[in-house]
Length: 137
Image (cartoon, rainbow, N blue to C red):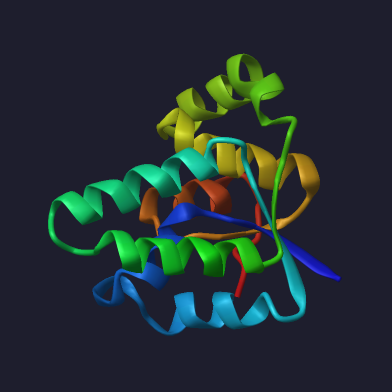
């Protein structure tokens, strides 16, 4: 089974239609035959973005509940080892690539596991390319 690291910028485009595009749709479709790996911060990032979206009127509690059910049904696995790398590899990578620690967590996971990275974040894409990490298609 094909595996890749899934950045939250792609996931949130599945919820906010104005952020969706052919790339994010293709990544979602690829999960029919693939597994996505995410760092341990991912569920908190998802929850926060959904909550802020509700507060700004871009979503509702009912819509969020349906979306969370969709996410639960997808083959997305949370990497339990992310926190062990937070104050070493992730911190160093964030410094070197001028990323937030959150974004560096996705890049570090892709590097550690030797996987491609699915992201829409421009800075994270540049950092992945600089570090020799393939971008998921």
